[in-house]
Image (tube, rainbow, N blue to C red; front, top):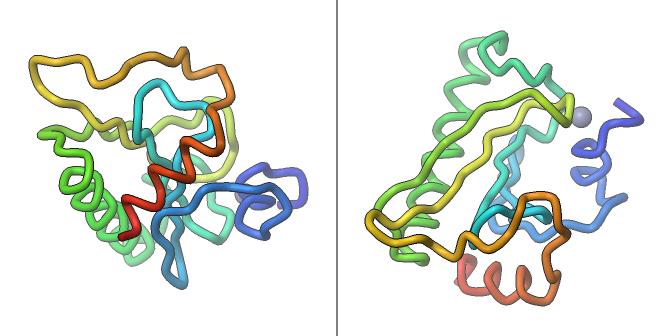
Length: 131
Ligand SMILES: [Zn+2]
């Protein structure tokens, strides 16, 4: 879809901070995070944001790709919970939002989710997550 922000990110037309990628999916640090490590997982191909309409094989692959990213976040950010949110409110491209969370402590909830993150900070975090 030519006017889709996520399609433009996949095409490299809009910069992003990727932490994981395979032939079908990418995971990137959300540029408008509500917390440290907030990550988006999305298919490279444009799908309707209602992921429950996906063909079963695509849906399963999407969940397995997301599971790998969850493991990465839990390991490197030392969190014990990852909140998984499927929404189709803002970008009309299937995606999952992952919110790292440490039980009993706020996990650097310092953003409103509407403020552009410091890209250098995201790059530093991505370096850790990809190591
Ligand atoms: Zn798209």
